[in-house]
Amino acid sequence: MRGEAVPPAILPGQSPARRGRGFLAAFLRDDSGNPTLEFTIVFPVIMAMLLAGAELGMIGLRHSTLERALDLTVRDIRLGTGQVMQHDEVKTAICRRAPFIDNCDHSLRLEMVQLDPRNWSGITARPDCIDQSRPVSPVRNFRNRTQPNDMMILRACARITPVFPSTGLGRGVTKDGAGKFSLVAISAFVQEPE
Image 1 (cartoon, rainbow, N blue to C red):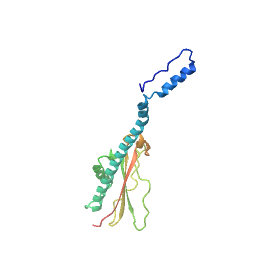
Image 2: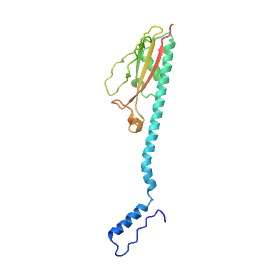
Image 3: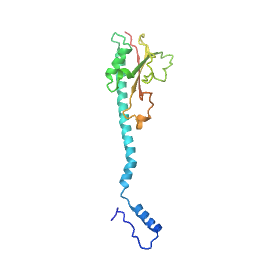
Image 4: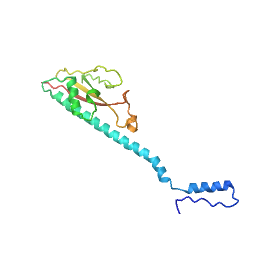
C-alpha cells in the first residue's frame, strides 16, 4: 500500500547499522505528512498578505474620506458665504464629513498657510500632526483672515491607529509614541473676491 510505512523485515543476524538504514529508508519513502508541512509553510505567508490587504484597504478608505472631507470644506471656504470660518469651525466641518476617522476631534490637526504664487516658497515638508504621547502643543499656523485673490494651502493631518498593528503593513508604517500613524491631505484654493 502506498503511503504507509512498512518496517523492513528484520532478519536474524542483521547488524544494527543495517537495520537503522532500513528504518531511515522507510521513513524517507513515507509521504503521509506532506500536506501538513506545506500548510505550515504557506499559511502564514497567505495570512500576512490577507491582513496587509485589509490594512491597506482601511488606510485607503480613511485617506479618501479625509481627502473628500477636506475638499468639501475648502469648497465652502472658497465660495465664501459671507462668514470667515475659524480653526474650530473648519475642523468641525471636516470631522463631520469624515466618519471613518476615529476620534477626529482629538486626532486631527490643521494648518492654513498663505503663499505668494509669484514668489513661491512652499510649505514645510513635515506636516503638523498631533502626537498623543507628548504634551499638547498649540496650532502651528492657521491664518484665515485673507485678502481677495490670496492663495491658501490647507493641510490636514489625522493620526490613525492601524487595524492590525503587529502584522504586515500595520507594523511597517512609521508610528508616533502612541502607536498611531499619519494621514495627510492637502488642498489649495484662492480666496474669491466678494
